Image (cartoon, rainbow, N blue to C red):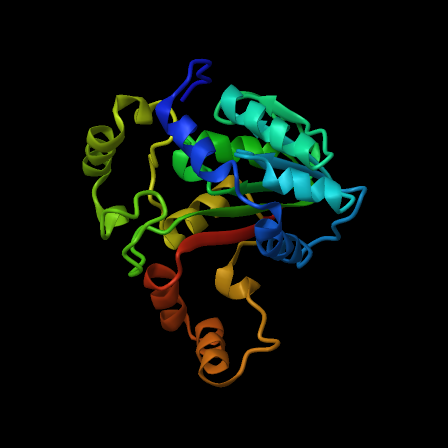
Length: 260
């Protein structure tokens, strides 16, 4: 991957589809993300946060509106421009740098928390990018990671919901389908180079050096859950085969929290 200064159809479509979303609609996702981070460290005005792949900027905007500091990094100048405009509409000046997490240094032990939500599937050389993120975290810092889940039984993938079981396709078949549908430029920015699985990512996080790896079942709270839902979650937490089944087929994303 590289930074592309020219207009790209996939980015234009993304801005058209998501640039008009109401900020209030993002508050539950924001609160969930902060709640997960706070399971391993305190998040306050002194916390240095970086978001990789800011998109339309909703996360750093909500951070600032809630008294938190969040820098951003994005590979698309057009997305940065759109996010900055949206920030201004909400009285926020965003700090988003242009760069490629595969190759551009993020700094050494600079951040307390790094957020990578719905971005690593689009990073071609994702393992070097993950090592870059790890190096930029301070000891005790944490990575929140959320991406694609290849074999989920919910057949409508967020990457391409028109095609049932899209994520199950081999890489080359997915690439060809997207090029035919959206044009060859989708391979510059916008394609999901990867459809991840929980075991694959868990292994990568461990090899990168993270001291603890929490998946979505670890992160979900029992509080407020009753009946079948409570029993099912308890079984998944305590019974490894059940956990593997749920994580492989029944959750829409690969969600992890990884303290350094």
